Image 1 (cartoon, helix red, strand yellow):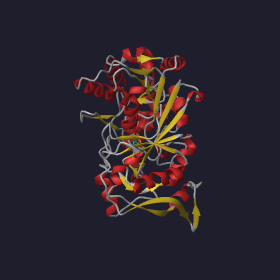
Image 2 (cartoon, rainbow, N blue to C red):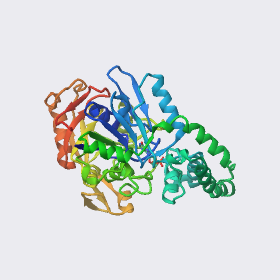
Image 3 (cartoon, protein in one colour):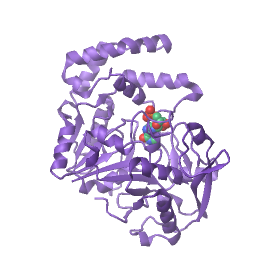
Image 4 (spheres, protein in one colour):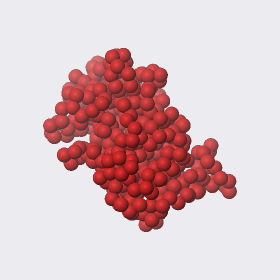
Length: 428
Ligand code: IMP
């Protein structure tokens, strides 16, 4: 039995889709356990075909894999249908996708409220993706959410939407000066959409536990990343769910003792989208180089990502809060052709050297990176197949990251393609 959690070690966009896709052949189930269509995975197949996925697990591109949208996810039904349609148009078999009956439905009013709230916050905004994620999770916690299984009972669905809109319409109209939404219209729209996904609704926690009992291999695919976790991230500049490894058990409905491996995805440098502190952020030509060479543009929003050097304080923190056993280091090729490659090994916070994440938000806002300079490499590494094929300085860079982050670097991405990965130690 193996249940592998795949988690972004930084602020998301580390290249998780590539890792899922690499493991695809050895995996029976791929499960999304949190977030919604705020996520964006880009997968490049050997044929060169590129797929951008937002809501559907990236295992959908590997024939024979069962894919699950778990109970911890928030599902925008319109986006789900568009994404399914897009895959089917390109002849991808989507029959293996199941949706947890307990996942929450992201409704049009969640999107409306996300947008008006961000506008209202002005320069204090979170920089959300504007997809309604926060408002949907707010409703879940406030116990006024609509769940996927509610589409199977029209009366209950109507009651829930009406109850939710009673307050939401007051907020939209009286505070934000927007139009009220008509509950009947919302219900009709959702029921219409449900015709396209009803047959996929399942008790996925039961199915996943049964699969584990049959010794099948389950990959639990996190979205976003450790520092966007609502508990362990750079609050309040975070998403509204728990991407960290513990969230995988809750968001899929399996016991934490079933998790056998936690694979952290770590970009060879750091990026962040949206607002919030970012100690190693670069505002010079190096930042522009990383953005351009790394193609650092959000898959979901098209926003330019902020770029900076590798931050080992964050990696150490991610290793701890997730219990990471192995790292998949992505985009190492982006760093080729630099004279030196700086690594942030610690912070200076108010005149003191700090090795670990500062305890307070203020401390993190004040953190200044302390760098160690590693000699760079100029060789093209995109065709390297083994660790030993890499230039010595690239090997040294990885070994230093490993030492600083406290977990083994088991896979190394040397290009965007499926076959451009060095496997140093097998994950499954
Ligand atoms: P939300 O998840 O749309 O509420 O946005 C909250 C924060 O998380 C913002 O800073 C977003 O930019 C960030 N965020 C959400 N999803 C992703 C992602 O997939 N990659 C990177 N950042 C994300």
